[in-house]
Amino acid sequence: MATAKNTICVWYDKDAEAAARFYAATFPDSAVGAIWRAPADFPSGKKGDVLVVEFTVAGVPCVGLNGGPAFKQTEAFSFQIATDDQAETDRYWNAIVGNGGRESACGWCKDKWGVSWQITPRVLTEAMAAGGDEARRAFEAMMGMTKIDVAAIEAARRG
Image 1: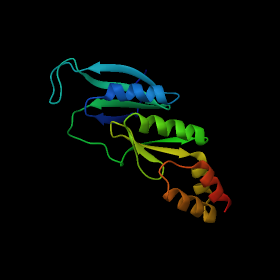
Image 2: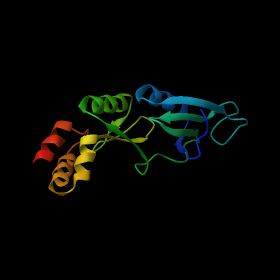
Image 3: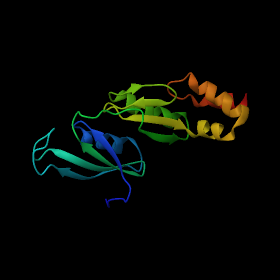
């Protein structure tokens, strides 16, 4: 895996490799690349511990850094995964939540490492792009959801 010019770096306490392997098994066009081990002891680990993991999530190059507990994940960063239908939405949502993650609101959830995910059906994005009453109705429907209900968004779009 060649190093991209721009790469997302995601901070983990100590489980970057496990997270990368989960993402690669869950999302298409995802893979685990190079795994770098610490050449010496560092504040939250020892020489030989996994320090950096190169991985790709749905075609986006990332680096996972096992930086220790100093910084926690927040919703200020999230992966947004566009889905084509309810089955795909359910598959990704259930994979994340069912693997120690937790539900949030409006299509957001967190994986067990605290990383936020937006599982966003394209029908919702299309409704918002349409603007006007269609966008308002879809938005109002979404505001009451945890996982996005595609049929409910489609019904809201129609009015």
